[in-house]
Image 1 (tube, rainbow, N blue to C red):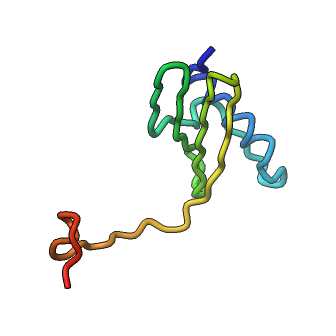
Image 2 (image 1 turned 180 degrees about the vertical axis):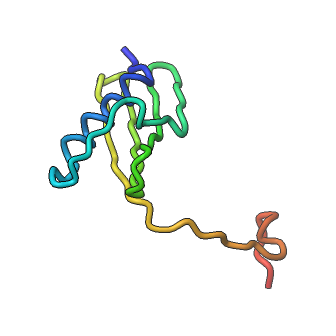
Image 3 (image 1 turned 90 degrees about the vertical axis):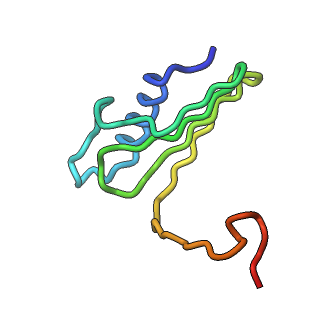
Length: 96
């Protein structure tokens, strides 16, 4: 059965609390996890989640309903950079 958003958030809570440096003495709860984006199609779903911890991490959970498997990817945000598009690049053509 497709996991609920609350179940997905709990997976992140458990993952974070298992991986966090114990000397930080920090554990998170469901209230510290939020869903950035969620999509469900047929028996599958994908969610992007983050936490209130300022560590630059975000998490992607993908549920394969055919295999009843859930995949977790943990990412570290390195940079948020604005790239200005010029000329026809915005319209799908490169300017020369």
